[in-house]
Length: 463
Image 1: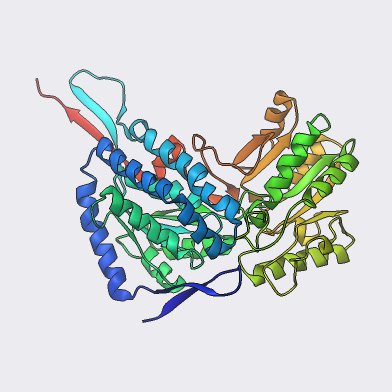
Image 2 (image 1 turned 120 degrees about the vertical axis):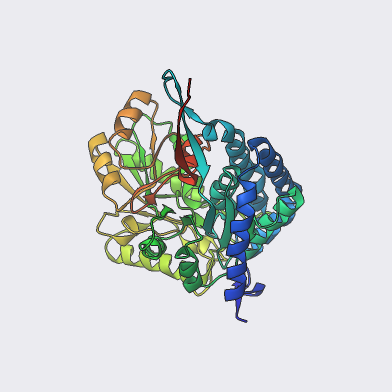
């Protein structure tokens, strides 16, 4: 039987090694899911809520231990990792549990004498969730909890970098008393993932990952009449207007650019600043960036850990080098970050100016602690540049004029439009993307629509 190894970016050691599921294990998981879902769909929303809230309790009870595992698996500083559970995971899970009754309620239609008519939201069956490593609990909870609340069974395939996250879900649902087979996980190779997606027992695929991965998922379901929810790449822009609160914009955009070493699908990767405040903005932005501490993420004082792997750091460094060769200026001296070393995952944050959209660093996803900043002279120029991208996940504006924010937001091609904040998912709002950032929706009551199918009841009552 073959195995997969998780190489920790901290020191290059093998942190986790797991056996990959063989054909028999995959077959059993699919059959068990089908059988378990037939019974699970008959449970009430209240019964599902009790179990899911207890599963959340397990995560909160073990947040520190889970945080340490996360740091070892993907490199985020230990000072932050437990908060993925205590803040975002808990917020999203509890919100989606709380709105399930409303989202899944029968849709009543106008009464007609002698008839009873309504639309019921039936669970799809078996949901296959393919989750990434960068925010391994935040991305997966968007689908796992609502899929189970909707009456589906779930099979989770987590990234090779974060296999313990899948195992933590299993432990949480066991603690909560979820019936066997309703939630399962599989450690799989890429070719096995495609085979599972193509299996007739899978009714929906929730995928978060790269554009290339999204194409592979789409190809795997092309022969079947099912839908895949695809959350893919981003090159998320911010626009700082002349009337913005400068200190607030700098503080939040530095964090939005560099938190998690920039490895966030909705992180800030390009910034457009009105020319009237551009010089002060880049000065303040660079000075705040220099306060980061790059180093061992197990140290409490570290605020910037390694990237997930050396190849990711090398990819980002090449974008930086290519931009500089084309005329860009780097504002950060990497010598300020002693842990920055070529040939390792430890990459210093970088701020680039004198950039343009002919440079890859301003057009292709970087997924690293790197941001390019350009001056603009008007709202119209900012809109044009924000829309000049193959991606459209989130975008933000920094201004004190809410009417202008709405008017500009209506013209920007994006799934989420922020004013005076960024790099955040509000579980009450639909999480979606446009263009190459994907399709479909998670979170909010709207997120339940993809996890159910409408079934119409048209009942004639005999007099």
